[in-house]
Image (cartoon, rainbow over all chains, first blue to last red; front, side, top):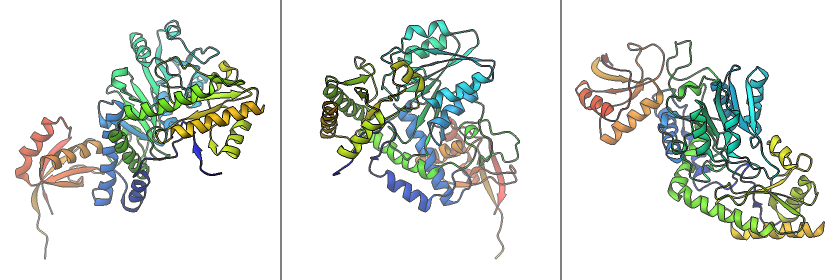
Length: 382
Length: 80
């Protein structure tokens, strides 16, 4: 195998921008515990964490840097948002597109009595905006929705969903795991109340980083309580964001890497990154869509979608296809179920799963073409 | 040599992120001072505070107010 062609960027970006690894190493060597002292090492960590909040607020359209809260990943951010805003007496609306990091916290609340309704996906994995309105109830507290499906790449119309949610007095919690860093995201312009992100996918930082961006005025109960670096003698967790939701030592080493990644994104421009990733995704899609035996999932007529193409070859087990792609062609993809059980049910791919190709700004047209050729050869071999 | 206490201005904050915003603001404006642990004379516990000479009070507080950076208090203390 000559060189790995990494097309699993929706799982995590493998190729990080210059400076990310160095920033983590430098932080490990020199950073103290953020917000735990006034000596140089602690202050260095505190400054890095704060600067990263500022950069992420700019990148994601969060009105205040102190409303950017760090967590260890999107799952933790979503759990904080869902469990901190919803109660058993509430009702919530979500969609068939969601990842288990949304579904499982919602199911846990449903088991305690919370009402839960789903906007259904069709056989192509599409949801209709019109299907939201009939689901609202007087006690609907929130709509929890992905910005882009991690399986198909399809994107719901978030601005309209926010509008209808607010018209019914509900909040919009957005799972931006697949979009933060890969396309322009402005939570304020979209009308998002809480945006949950991960640091290691499109934002191209280290694993173990993520967080929430919170609209000022949204009151989230803490999921964890503990050390905060302030108000040590109070029995309650401090009320101010971000400390309210950041009990315990932050991953300032990882955040230092995320800070370097944010520098790259701000310098290169998310719009430019988006254009390149979209071009690669469209190139690959156009190359595989007419191959006999290949089924591609999702809506490629939409202008906005994530740089994801999921497919199957005939009735071939996606796990086996992915393995052959890696073993014979050096192409890394993600097979099987993608932690999106309801969407697999809608697509009819519960047993087969799907092979997901996902692109990053560090991929090339040559790599997309080699992946097309590999799919072609595999389809012809069946 | 015995250390002598001197008057000091100490500005405290509700949260670490406020302290960091204030530090950035003061540095950019070229205003004097540095972060210290919150003195126990002000509050038992932990956290960050900005220490400067008493005569800098107006400049520092004006800068905070102008930039709408919150703080929880402004104290004159005798400190080593």
